Image: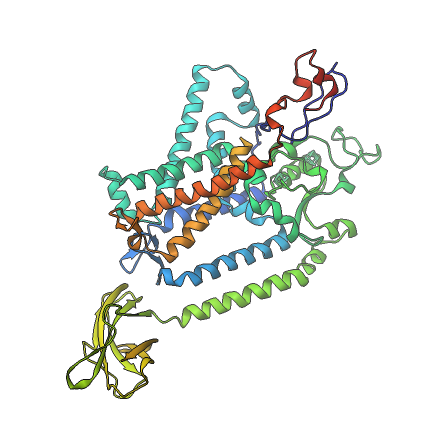
Length: 473
Length: 96
Ligand code: SF4
Ligand code: SF4
């Protein structure tokens, strides 16, 4: 909580620690920066955004390659089709993502936050737009402080217009992953969007605009659960953005020519550039803070300062707690990447990935549900035989129409009296009613276990056995 | 503002999870409302469902926030001590 700034003249002030209705938020004017890590950040922005904006337009087998079709209740990912029954794979995917996050965090801190998190990526894009219209840090601060004028209004509206366009396109793309994007585009152009589609495009667009334009670092600080529990994945061998206190302190300004070592000064020239570039507005020189998203902007910034001063780079750098203490070099740090924690995360992760890949590879693209006809339990038909009625839901999960042969086993002389071949179109569910007959003395009175077997014609490995019960009076 | 975030944000996440689980298990077309077959599209049901889940979770968050407030909260001064008017006894002694 913000502590109220003591006012001069007021007697003793006890800061109020709780129930402050809102925290006065200082707007952060991050200065833009260039350098190795900034380049990497932009590479990731391009990579993730080309993937996000582009993937929904890719075709596969005459349909959208990646489509989470909510209306049809089917998820298409390249050659695979997932049904609601496949929720198991979704759970596995979540576990894999979580473990990968643990592993990356243990090795190199908040890599995800700094480079791949949508919050960071969109903030980066929006800040770039902001800089385009309003200039860099100093110019923006001046503009915000200035009274409203035609120029200010123009710049601000142009910026917001650009932001809104990006937001809307993002919202459109997002919805395009849930309803086929080409149809959606067509509906947009011909002004025929359904109310819910309009709503979700606006909703997501608004969220993008708000999060990347205004909330920015506050999302990381106050809303993101990952930021709060990152600490448990860190250890003294985790690579983090750190300031080399030993080398930098005591900080202080100096002229370039002076011999600062002789004057008892460290390498930090106290120019505060590292604070100005920080998107979350912290001072890395105070040590690791939970707000730091590991974006490395301060590394790039400080390296430039060091270059100017002709000091060696790396006053702020990726390092580990141990390395700083023991003065390790890069090789020693790399050697400590393999340690019990990372090995554990890594082996569990690879085991699950392999198991999931195997499960996917041997997945049978056919599912059958057997439902007893509740209206008619068992009835006698010609020849004194007993007939039971079943309803089979045959799900053909392959993307081609298939013919399936039905058979029953489990009792003597059990027999299907209805159609024994069903044809199911590609990726659909067909419901067939099946009449099964047995001799009245083939089993005990009441329920008898039987098995339905469904086998794809021409694809012998595609078969499913489902149990059911046959009633004898 | 902070309270709004506390109420709306966790409930948004919970609403999303509840939505996923619920509609993975149930097809909107199979649902009946008061025993009557509805005629809404799946997308409409998904959307309405999501907002209902969100609303319910938000209700729970709001309730938590409410009972977390101190019982005397309505009688406390919202201003930090140094911002209270001159002459206010609580300006000098601080407190709430
Ligand atoms: S302290 Fe450095 S790495 Fe951390 S968020 Fe700020 S600029 Fe990025
Ligand atoms: S950028 Fe480097 S030299 Fe400048 S204040 Fe930060 S740590 Fe010190």
